[in-house]
Image 1 (cartoon, rainbow, N blue to C red):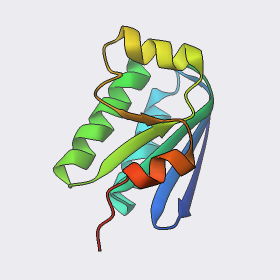
Image 2 (tube, one colour; image 1 turned 45 degrees about the horizontal axis):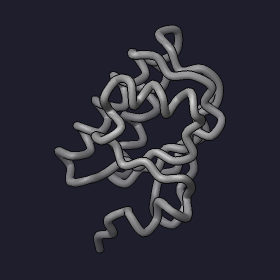
Image 3 (cartoon, rainbow, N blue to C red; image 1 turned 90 degrees about the vertical axis):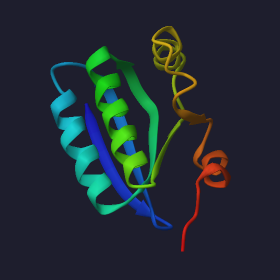
Image 4 (cartoon, rainbow, N blue to C red; image 1 turned 120 degrees about the vertical axis):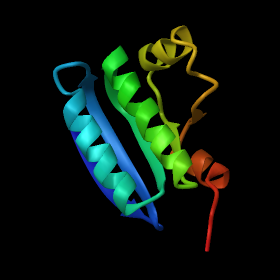
Length: 113
């Protein structure tokens, strides 16, 4: 798994590539928590994520909860069909805001002064 983090227009864009599973979910957790401590608006690009396991889902859920407590939000974009299926099968498709692209996510992002 590779994680790339960029600040674009005051929003943290986290791009994840490869497999997200128990062997690297701690790395994702560390990167996500660091991003949350620096920015309350996160767009997570999963276009190059090949797979996500339950441990990866747990990290995203914990991050979502942490952001909610800080009046922030996370939007997931560009999910591959296999990754989207994992969210749907786990019943999490409705818990996360999922959009097709960065451009589709921006209008859904809550902007605060």
